[in-house]
Image (cartoon, rainbow, N blue to C red; front, side):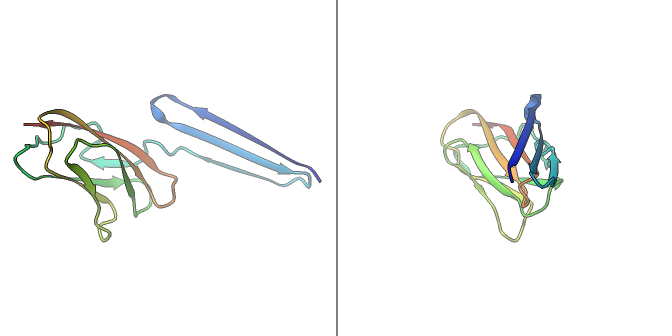
Length: 133
């Protein structure tokens, strides 16, 4: 018995990924699966928003909520945060993350993090602009 498998992946612009996989064994069985994961979670504030300003002299708190898409709980992974800020999740609130802390540097900053649902089939990379005074 021989096994053959083929994988075809297509990467589209804007980070959207469509994936198709097929595996066939010599006995004639096959299985097909496809999904379009990137960009199918809706956030509030919307991805790409300008967040309320922060200050190096005060605690900053901004909640980001997954309002639609995927299956909770969600995992929030920081990709880029200004020094002094962190992502805080509360286990009992499965669809929120809090950007919190006291920023260390005055200026413009970008906050980016990845959100993945519990099935690993829905995700988005969130990016927000923040002015620190």
